[in-house]
Image (cartoon, rainbow over all chains, first blue to last red):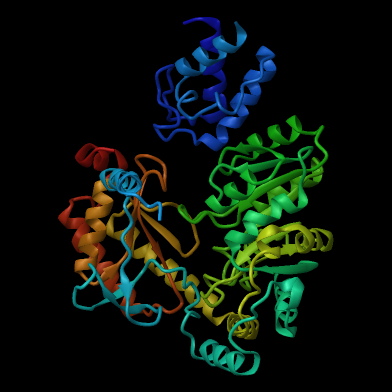
Length: 80
Length: 415
């Protein structure tokens, strides 16, 4: 696992997880009912501040934020 | 006409998708007034069936209360049927303002403004009082109408874990640079039946200079010693900055809602809240009924006391029978079944036994948290509850879930 995924996974577990949740990089977050898309705004804000990027609303879709792997892919696009 | 076959097909496909996902909602036609005993036509065209209703928001049994009905008749005779106007043109009667004052006095607030519904109140209030330099911090389980209201507002938003005060505090610390902070909660959470910790929330609001918003739709009239709401239960009457509530549940059950709170906030809504500015005034007949409902509640706590006793009796009966309930002390008592199909089968079988209760599952509640949500009423007598309890036990035995743990039920039926 690379650093980016590590950072995102750690934030997701801290911000959205409960004690019983076993969240991995593949866990479907929104479609799996773990997080609602409305609450994903804090993750988007966190990523924008940490990586000094601006993710457009169009790109911040529920599909793009549905797992740590997908979020990492999205962030990479904006960093590069 | 541009409603072509292609266009029709687009919608038919969407409706089919909803059906295939098991999310298609079918209405049941009730042929009687709303009450504990109702007559239902379901499915459409079927013979009428007498059933006991344990899923209405008719918490105090006022929906068909003779005094409320009589007052509504009198209001109709004295003030007419409709206003044919929004409030600020020529839609405000003396009784509209009278109700606003009655609500303020009842809730312990400075002023109140009526809306056509609490949905409209929640949709309009944030946009009316906040700008993009502000932050709205909401509990993750607030009602959908609040989420819609926040989406319509230019202020930033964030959420905190349900009922988690440490998480809320972190968010308040994070947003100290904002012009205004608003902490947003339901008083009673309608799917779980638990209550907001308003005393702790007020403490945090005072420490971090934040406004407190609470939706009391499932609380006004019966939560707290005299029924004023969750703020009374938590000992913080007078400290709520914004309360929204409905007249469509305990307070007569017809329709209408309000924003009640600080003078300036109410006045901002009167000037800027779009659902208020662009919707007709509440009909005089409803205003008259709601005024009577408040009069009944101020006269005695008999109805909310009976409701409390009914809820206690119901919880005790279900718990002793071996059902798993969501913890709480409100008249919302969720019977946990976890599996979506089981919740639907259970509801259908209850109906067969003459008990009307609905199963809820994802996305209305979290995945794996399917349930039958039961709601008590002061209109329920012991014989209603005993019959409903017997039906729950009979169906519970059929599905072999009595006395089983969550893990065991999930092992039998899956998530």
